[in-house]
Length: 321
Ligand SMILES: [Mn+2]
Image (tube, rainbow, N blue to C red; front, side, top):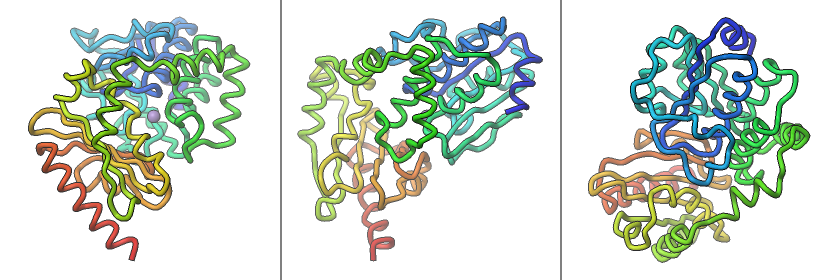
């Protein structure tokens, strides 16, 4: 931590970068750090290659996160948040490359330590939990804007404090955030009880594809381009749907396939306890955590599904003998 605090103190212009296809942790961590650096009088710029999900648009300062179109070159410091490797930054990687110094704040065990300063805590529930710690070093006290952003980061990455990454420390951090002004019921309503009609209809489509394997221990769901069109939904609406496959009694491993285009399929894995899904995803060049991971397969949905199920068959044969 002292290295990054020093780097921040010595810098005036600071770029904050988060990952492609951003989630609550990506956006919340970036915004919280942005507010903290604002307070220190730094010139802060937020970057993300992709659009910010509408569900996060209520966060104060979210509009300041821009796409990397003609970014100012040569920032004193560029900090990547929630990015396990350089590729996760997408087009924003050039901003880091052109910065005087770089830092990487993340909680993925697969992190590749790609920056000058690397703050990687594999047991943190969210990058937001690490940013909370950093903010303590930078500020006397947090404010409501930081609290809402960090609460969002942590509550989304822990699945509402339900995943195994949720620790006593996580709850202590959340307690502080409530003291800083985070309103639990307001944030829960905004984040979890606010589904669009399109999302709900798409869920119906996805549920219709449900199949189970290995005696009900593995479930699969998928969404095609055609299904998205039929209900007027976008890719953003798919976020979180895999949970419905995993929440079925008896399911140890849930797999979700998303048809990106006719020759590209994104695969997500979730598991409860038995299956190390980071190993499964790595087989296809992906990565993630033991309990949540993903990969992109350059095959049509049908073939990607077949390949994935074969890998799962093999995994079950080898590890569940
Ligand atoms: Mn995260």
